[in-house]
Length: 115
Image 1 (cartoon, rainbow, N blue to C red):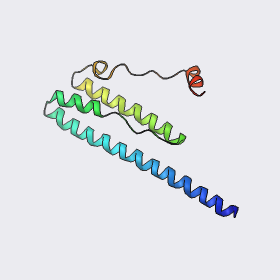
Image 2: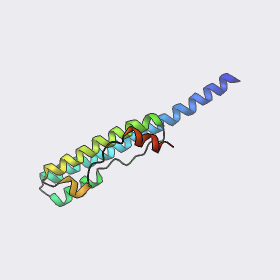
Image 3: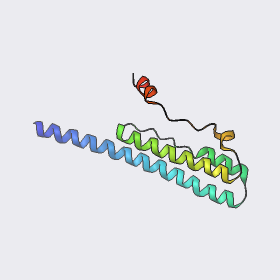
Image 4: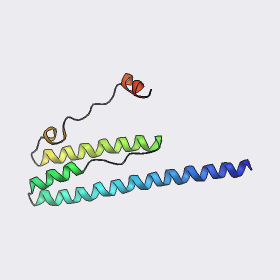
């Protein structure tokens, strides 16, 4: 009986983490598609449309597990840096469009948030 419960628990965890990874992969594909469109738009010198695409290139998926949460946070930072760099390439100040880049939280802030 305990073996069945253990296997069932493992199956649930495996299924849940597998779904999480699929959602992360889908978000990456969405952003890569926007990046391709952005490169095409920049080559056509359509700056206004390129700005709009940069705004859309924000990481939107929110993870539901702790392990995927840290991965999503890192990917969100990577994609934020990418879109800020693209805005610089087209001659736009990223702060004007996206605002200041958020600073990392201090340990004290993290502890306060956890309560």
